[in-house]
Amino acid sequence: MQQFIRQPSEEEWDQFSIYARRMRSLSPTPLNAVFPSQIALELLNARFSGCCMLPNLREIRWNAYKERHAALVLPLTVSPFLTVFNLWLVDTSHAQVVASSLAPAYDSLRSIVISWNDSEIVQEFSTLLLKCNPNQLRDFGVDSPLSWTAFLHASQLPNLRYFVIQADAAIPPSGASLPTTMFPSLRYLDIRGIDTDSTWLQSLKRIYPGNLGGLILEFKHATAVKKTLPVTLAHLRSTALHQTLAELTIDLRGGYCPSFEVDGTTIEPLLSLNQLTTLVISFVCGQGKCGHKISDEDLEKLVKAMPKLRFLALGAKLCSVPTNNPVKDLVAIAKHCKHLKKLTIHTNVEAIINSFSDRGDFLVEDPTFGGPALGGCPLRSIIFNPCPIPNGVQGVKIFASTLLRLFPHLAEATSTCPVSPEWKLVGAFITALRLALVTGESGSFVSRMKFADGDGVADADTEVD
Ligand SMILES: [Zn+2]
Image (cartoon, rainbow, N blue to C red; front, side, top):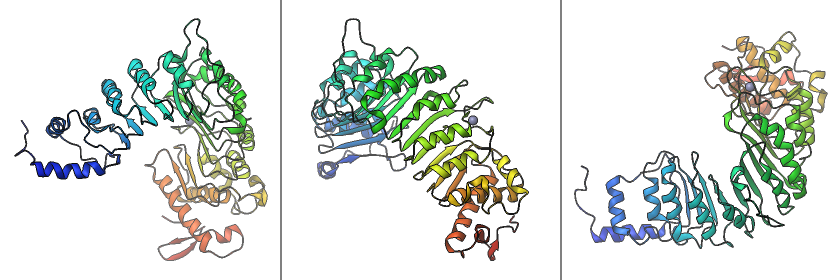
């Protein structure tokens, strides 16, 4: 059995306390965490039982995904001044310990965000919510259902800005009525587990209008998205959502959903949200079925309706199934998105390359690209689906230079399949071509399409192996 060679001296404990009193923030990361062993924890427990080891701690931000003893450390560390508690813990058997360890900080806590790997600890977290100082609490996002009483309490908190609710858990008991106005200060709402019969969603109408800036809607299955998304957004309309909402994520529980397809009907209810800066439609393709069914026309409608977009993601884990029409979707984005910085999208690289490879002048004012009006999209990074890039280095060159023609500020184009050497080469070409554009001479785009190789500057048409 492990044991210390000797016990720490009183002087050493005094030294420890000097450092411990200075600590304001505890945020170990997997790289820098030197995690105490079981015997060290026992020693600390014996020394600090009944008092606080880190008496001035204000913040705990901890992704304790791999830390077996995280729940043992928390009761030692929570101080009466703790304001921020942000924990990611995989082992749900510690949920009670985590909830009760926060007791010393009931009066000071402003932000409680706890992520689990599926937890159903209703009682402890409802109690936690009810006991916290109602005027202090700003964020409450615990990945677990709450009791009806706790939900009602949350809905009346004067300063609550961020809230996570499980749609299943917000079903009023018979005879219960809702307050006329709910969530007077709410800015970010995250609703999880939405089903087709989540009638509670009607109560969203009572959210105080003019505040909601961010919304995450997590649906149980594909049918729930199609049926309930328009209804949910319609209920939220009375909160002036279309004037205030900047960030929207539509998520499918568990990611992979074989019947989920994002198409024209999915995006139709989103078109009135013209203040969006972030739109994420998160789905996972799989088993030969692709969820991306957005036509070029629908995509153009979408980006036209949301001129402020800075981040657009259509898919979470993309498949290699190519889309129907090459380039048109990217042209629509290049034309209409004057603020976009990051994009995740399916494309059809092979068709792009094939349509341009038989023309030497594919980069000169081509009507496909919409003429000289292009160039105003500040896009920096694209993630594509892991489709193969045909025609070796020539294909890579055509693809990379087409992307730069559309998005002159592009710094990074990757695929969700990082092992492909062609995709790595696309990144290298984009870097080299951009460098040449910055340092190169003026003139037609083709004449500026030069990149540096080992011997200096070479023309873009030169083969590089
Ligand atoms: Zn796909």
